[in-house]
Image (cartoon, rainbow, N blue to C red; front, side, top):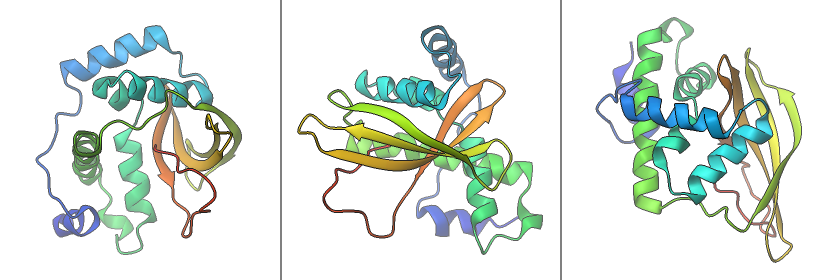
Length: 178
């Protein structure tokens, strides 16, 4: 295991977060009633609705930190494949979840109330169940943004992982706050 890597990658170390606490199960259950998550559009709409409602637990239920951690570790050039164990994935997932919470507390929820967003493309990523989804958002001033987002097709439906950032974003477009 490479415990120092988490500090290098994330710059902050966090205590592990319970993988499946009652609050998150409740948020997932209520989300299942409201959203089917049968398509990437539905999963992104559910996350964006959670942002609009300022509901952190529902936002967390729209994501899959375990798959995100596995992709992060598999894609990282300094992580030996032999180091990617279920325990290490769980540890990194807990850090990602805690960082997501801290980001929302620090920066607030992304603003989606005035946006009209839709998925315009979907293609397989390098790993089973992981896809690159392109979302296009229209702003009230007619500006647009296009963002590629990693998503996972899980047993419980589509889940949002993380955006793929461009090296030099187009300055004429708005940024997409996933």
